[in-house]
Image (cartoon, rainbow, N blue to C red; front, side):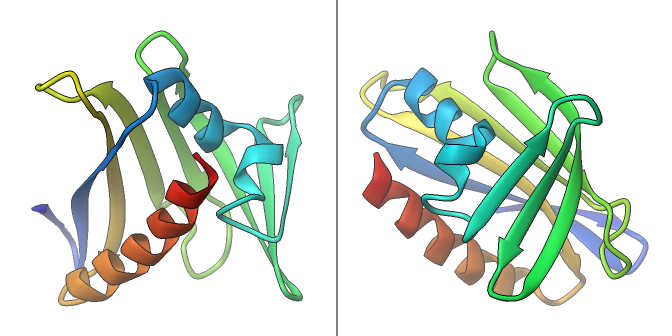
Length: 133
């Protein structure tokens, strides 16, 4: 896990490995019907505004897609909510060096000192994702 300091926030980098094609994993990261299988209860994407709406129980969060590169399997979005406005999550999918696994690299932002909490949160989310592949 790498860390960059940004005010009282930190950028963290997390890596996870899967036994699937990079294209299959990338599909699970950027298609609403796939995201609602592992990330949120409901996901809607407005292709005109490039805004995802994620729903969990009775709460909603929106995020604007800031980067999509299907060739290099990169996706990033910026949160639009009050408590996380301007914070960005970036996903990159690549064939691992041993070429037997696909690597998912997640770049996320957390409060300084909360790195372990965020890693545990992502570990739990990624376990759900791995069950869908």
